[in-house]
Amino acid sequence: MILVLLVMGCSSPAVDFAHQADALGFTSTVVRGTSFDHVVFRQHGPRGRRVHVYLDGDGTPWLGGLPARDPTPRRPLALALMARDPAPSLYVGRPCYHGLATTAGCNGVLWTSARYSDTVVESMAAAVRRIAASEAIADIMWFGYSGGGTLAVLLAPRFPESRAVITVAANLDTDAWTDRARVPPLKDSLNPARQPPLPDHIVQMHYAGGRDDVVPVDVVRRGVTGAGRLVVMPRYDHVCCWETTWTTILDELEQSMSRARSSDG
Image (cartoon, rainbow, N blue to C red; front, top):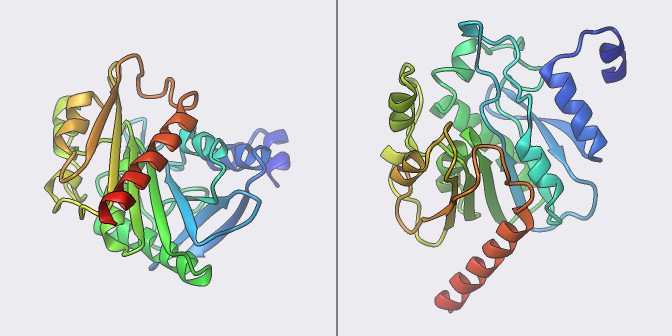
């Protein structure tokens, strides 16, 4: 189906994304959330009781001043990061993304002003709960890029299995982000900076690019709460060069997890 659409010139962001996932060797399934379906991509290979959950950016909420017909990310950085992760991993899509924008209940509000709403977060949580229950998952590590980092911080406290949250270039204070960008506030969304701090047992590492003009360091810093740690990469921007350093970030996470276990013991 993907190849047919490409040949016909009817490619869409959702089709292009699925094509890239297939090229990386990922499989896809559709998992029910609350009243929405979610497309989930995963790596081949063994599954374990620990899983890394990847959440991508906002994609294209608006196009030509109107809600986009297909908000699916056109440059799926989170998918590329997951491809560099040897651990059992899932990429969990948002409601109405990945070709589902015309399904029941979907409307442009869900990927514009309500992109981080309780409706969106709870449906994603329900989908992950189904997977966790069916696979007896005991430990969840959340990885979020850009707006996916916003969602990671909102999702983590809803799971007793959460062990870590790692965000990259994430708009952790959405009010500060919209103010700086001079765009309307996300009035139907939750703001991580206004939520209770994550429990101390959840390791938090928040990465920001010193040259990021999309989500500046100060926006990330304002949303780092509790025991969270901010790491600024001076030469990085919103896209460059997170792929090249991803294995190092994964190693740093393992070291932080090891220190956390030692202090608990």
